[in-house]
Image 1 (cartoon, one colour):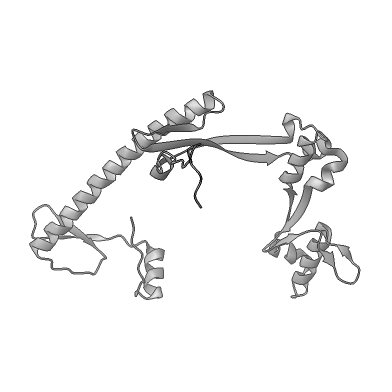
Image 2: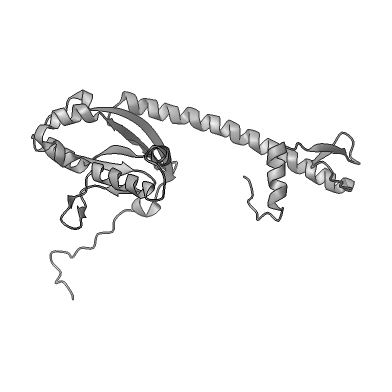
Length: 244
């Protein structure tokens, strides 16, 4: 794990090092076979105990790094066992082991990439209730906002023209404004409305309206012991009068 600290080095020195890609040089130490790396021009006279302590820390760090690497490999291997099982057995979502005090969840995450043209075709007249637009420049402008002076709802064309006029108002030519202002009109999708239309049987979605990528994730955690305790039920015998 790296440590972050506030640097007291002058900016000029940092820029110089970046520009020249200055490599450290090696200095010999009193400890045989061990040298230290320093910035050229630096002289450090370290006692043997300090060098030995630094070397010991380096060895320990490298050992831990190897342990983490091997543990990560084992983790990935076990994760694959669970995710592959989930892929081959729809509906499987993990396991719970009380003897191990462990709960493992396996769940899918889906990324949906819509084909706007095919989705519009499938939705027909309902497309305007699901598919919208945003103009993305340095800022994101939600369309449909009512403009002043009776201009009506904001459209992508109106937003683009206003941004171009603002750039040209700063003295840039029409040609120069094209390279300065990067405008992208992207579609937006109201998935809650789309779900509602599908559930109500108002539209049918063919496979070509979206490309779906599904990835299974695995999460493990200790069981909450409070949820495993038997529930205590208080009752009054039939032949006993309840007390208040």
